[in-house]
Image (cartoon, rainbow, N blue to C red; front, side, top):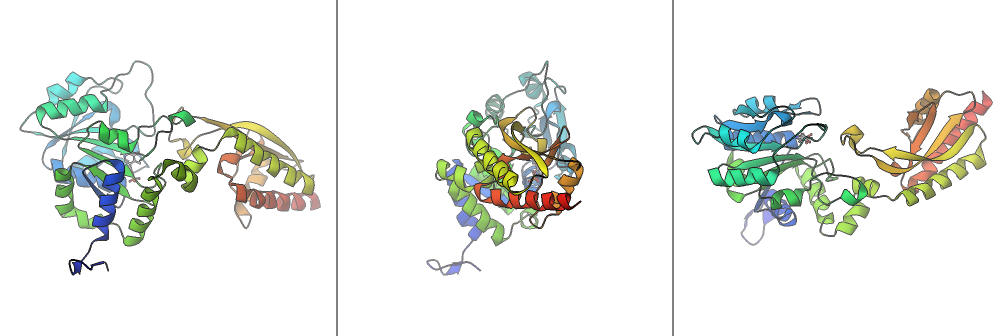
Length: 352
Ligand SMILES: *Cc1c(COP(=O)(O)O)cnc(C)c1O
């Protein structure tokens, strides 16, 4: 239990970390819930119950198999008011759909896991914010990934949390365990008046997080007080920002170690392209290096299986009949582990 020694009352760990988050992202208020799906749900229930929520037809996403915008809308007791078309949605589509009696929210959803290409148009967050201001309707942005620092120079073109707040969105929601690099959680930030409505909503208790999650989230956010430090201490950022040169060095170390110990494989250091989030950032490839392994008379599938079953499991990729070990996800102190796994497999294959 938390106890506030000054006031002589029960303190709230929630209040403490939520103040910290608000300060770091540059928002008036913040709230932590169980995941981003519950963040969006709570937002709809608290701000748009019985009202219409205007969303572009190009943004009716399904993410993670069960988060679907039309379904979450129903659960939150709001009515989906689709505007525009799959490929093009314009400012006037939103404007014409606004009804001062019925409209509860203008919702923008970041299409985290797909891209529409060709003849497309959408309305940027900033433009939507202007429309919201003019009509007095709150703008909510479901950002999804929770990227805190600009990674465009590393080849990741994703909007960030601070820039979304700076665009003027009234509420922004995102996950704790995607590009933020923290525990499973949903984070709601934005105008205090709206965040307070969500905190008071009966659903709030049902989507609360425990103090272990809060502690992990506090640690994660504190890393962002120094961006350079965050890139070193948070694994997801560390992997994304790892330079191709460093990957090549690690690849050479691994290849040499295995070659010295066994001749069961043909081993090469090769250029590779990685994708973050298991393909959830379409069209975004990070250049780097991998170690390519092929067994003499042993199938890549067998090597893949044996590496996965090794006491310190190693997950590899298969590409064009060769096993690829992408060095982006092999930390300096993990090179030995991967080498031991390959050497153990090699010894087994040599014995037949
Ligand atoms: C991932 C994602 C969600 C769901 O978030 P969870 O934390 O997995 O519940 C919702 N909206 C968007 C845009 C997302 O990218």
